Every structure is written in C-alpha cells, then in structure tokens.
Length: 402
Image 1 (cartoon, one colour):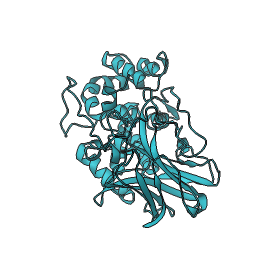
Image 2 (image 1 turned 135 degrees about the vertical axis):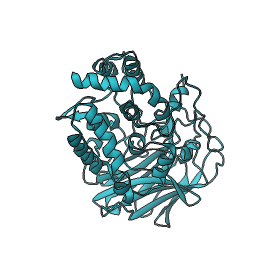
Image 3 (image 1 turned 90 degrees about the vertical axis):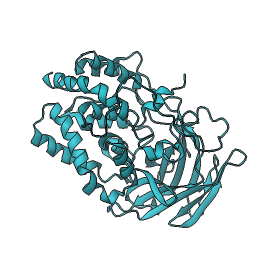
Image 4 (image 1 turned 120 degrees about the vertical axis):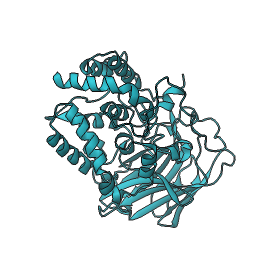
C-alpha cells in the first residue's frame, strides 16, 4: 500500500505536465519526421505462424487512423522494408522491399523484391504469388491494436483529484464496460507470407520505411521509441538508427526509465538499476525475435500475433516488484474478427474510395496545459502515460469518430 501511495503522489503532481507531449508520441505518430505523413509511419509489426504451420507471416501496419487523420494509400515515393536477421547480430541478412505506384482506378500496383531481386508483383487488395512459394498482399484493414483509453482517462482523473493509485488502477478494469477505444479504426497493411525454409529457424525481424534513400522510421518490438526515448529530435534519431547500435546508444535510456519506475515502487536504486539492465537486455536491440517452429507469443518475446496484448505485457514488465506487478493490464481483449488466411486482419471498417495520397496529421489544439520545454526531466507520470498510450497518440483521441 505504501508503494501505491508513493507512486500516486508522484503521478498526480507530474501528470498534468507530462501528458500533452507524450500522448502525441507513440508507435503511431512516434516522431515529427513521420507524423506528418501516415503512409510512412509504421504503426505495428507482427510476426506469426501462417494458416499453413510451415509458413511465417511478416506484416506491418501504417497510416494511423486511416481515413481519419491519415490517408488510406501507400506513398509511391517510399520504400517499405521487412528485414530479417538470421544469425543474431542485429544486422539484416534478408531484405524484402515493397514499392508502390501512384493510385490508378482506386488501386496501387506494387512490386516485392528480395535483396534487390523482384519476386512478386500485383495490385492492392489482391494476393500476389511468389514463384518460389509464398504470397504478398497490401491494402486497407481493421487496425488490430486494442486498449481501454477511456478507462485510462478515469485513472488520470482520479490521480489528478488526489486519489490513490490503488483506486485509480481499479478503475482501469472496473469501467462499465471496459472498452477498446480503437475499435473501428483502420490502417494500411503490408503482408508477406513465406515458407519457413526461406527464412530460417531462429530469426529477428524489424521493419523500416525509406524516403529518398534515407530511413525515416523503424520498428521491431512495440513501444520502444514511445516508452523510453524522449524529445522530438531524439525520437527522429531513434527512427533513423540501426538495431546493431541500439545496445550502445540506448541502454541508458531503458535502464533509467525502468529504474525510475522501480524506485517509485520502493525498490532501492542499486536493485532498480540492475532490474533496468535486465529489461534493457531483453528489449535491445529493437528486433522482434521469432522461432519459426513455435507459435507467436509476445508475452515470452517470441514474435507477435495479431491478438497479442502488448499493453498488458509492458504494464507487467515495468512494474513488477518481487514477482508481483503493480499494473497487470487493462482488462480489454482484442475484438477484431481475424481471418484464418491471408491477409489475416479483420476487414476494414470503412474502406471507401482510396484517397489521392498521404494526409498530414493535424496539429494538437490548445489543451490549456503548458507545453514542457525540451529540457523537462523525465517523470514517472511521463513514463506511465507513454506505456498506457503505447501505440497511438492523443491526436486520435481528439479525432475519434463517433
């Protein structure tokens, strides 16, 4: 109880300062360089077993809240990369590249290459066969991410009203009902299904988007940039960096934030730093590991299935003390009607006519709360807001379709 009260005090005094910045910086919209063009903004990466157990699916979503604050098409000036490491050195051994033409008659032609050699071509919304085995697909889908944002809103209100964290945490799972705020949002998806033999046994996967030969976004595990990297320039820098450099460049950030949470929960600094180092060793490099012979399960850091609950995993990992997490989840399950074959995602909620190109995300309106300077220290409130808003920012809250 003392740990909960201490954490509540820290959160309640700092939340009003931290929230405006961090709720607009998440996996979707996770840096200035990509937030103005949803078509190059990677929302999520998933790696899982296909309907044929001898196949592996590599897939990413883009265009956060497609058709709402982003467009619904792919950027003809960009390259979309799925990168595979086969020898655990965080350097790509296989590169799959998707390139799209401009929209024509409501569709986009695309090509897929492997290490520079074309292996498939097709048009959006239709499967494209790969001669050596496998299938590629691209189009609009239901965004599978899920999170009870309204429950989090009640948690925040309780903390700002000087309630205890114990009371606030209970509201996350006691709202009536617990609701997936992101139900009804769409995203653009790129899907590649390949025989396991084309990839290997133990692999590491990440995705990147390139514009004019420069990397502008990347993602392996969910939420690394969101939770641990602070500052606009730093977030853009992280998106442009390479996984092989992550341990050297970003271990201090992961250790520092994890340690801050642990110390707020009553752990002494030495033990908190040690736990932070353990977490950093798991999360970095920012590559999603996957054993192609096993089912995907992000809770054990083996790939990521469409229905995996990453919010619950991060709550538990970051707030566990003596084997017991202070935050375990938001009591919301995925409510998407996934398919049992490619593209596997649920059907888009509002496909409509594809727009002519990328749409810039609107700027945040005045919230009545002062924007912190770039030198504002990282606070526990900032960390918790970032974890709770793991994959989508405040811009979506303000543009939620009713």
